[in-house]
Amino acid sequence: MFGLDPLIIAIAVLAAISTAGLGYGFLFSRIQDEKNANARFRKIKAAETDRVNIKAARDRMNELSKRRKSVQDSLKDLQKKQKEKSARAKPPIKVRLTQAGLSISITQFYVFSGILGFVAFLVALIVGGSFLIALGIMIFASLGLPRWIVGFLVNRRCKKFIEEFPNSLEVMVRSIKSGLPLSDAIRLIASDGQEPVKTEFRRVIDAQGVGMTVPEACTRMIQTVPLQEVNFFSVVITIQGQAGGNLSEALSNLAKVLRERRKMKAKVQALSMEAKASACIIGALPFIVTLLVYLSSPDYIMVLFTDPRGHLIMGISAIWMSMGIFVMRQMINFDM
Image (cartoon, rainbow, N blue to C red):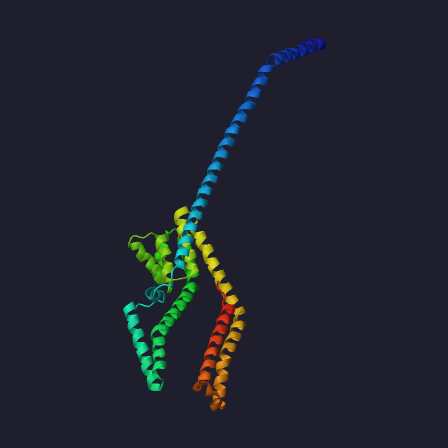
């Protein structure tokens, strides 16, 4: 074997390097053009992707804008209807009987009122009152007292409703999360709920049976339960029916808000109890003093009842007392 000459190896290496340099020199422009073409292609592809993303983002913004506008229009319509209802006069006695949960007709109510007034008139005459006093007692017993009783029953029923309503909403939330539709969740409350929520949701189901939608039936609920909380519920159902959204989350938030409102009312009531007690004491003090003076010195106080000047003094005192009681009631009455 003959050894290779180092000079020949060096010449071969230099020839290979020269050949590679010449080949790179001839192919450099083509390689650079391909590199530039690939860079431009990537830029065009990225621009198309950005255009698609921008279009998708614009479509999402347009959809959100449409939904927001729909919700705003719905709220404006509901607010307008609520203002129209508030501008109307006090609901008639027939509606008040329904709000109180009484199953009597308007005719029966007037018959009972007349009987109560007649009995009060007879009792006043038997006790020894004059005809005018007995007539005044009859008017109060037949017109004022029955309506006051109905108002008391309405307020008591509304308090029971607001105590049970958040629990019913949470039951609806769990039902909807488990896969039940809204109508079935309402039907569940109508069958297994507590009174008076059970009766009101049963009215919603009955309204659906005659062709009403769920939002329309829920909106009518405020006619039988005049509460702001019921109005909130109808607004949530109406907006969800028109604009869509997560109904279970909305009802869950509503139940939380209603509980916080009830806590706030209880806190305000506790803080205002001192003022209410003071107002009751101040309002009852003249009557208590009159009774004590009558028991200790009846001849001294009877002048107010027998002398015309005493009648004038009692009339003026009654007016001032009424004004003071009204002012104190406005000062301690916190509407929420």
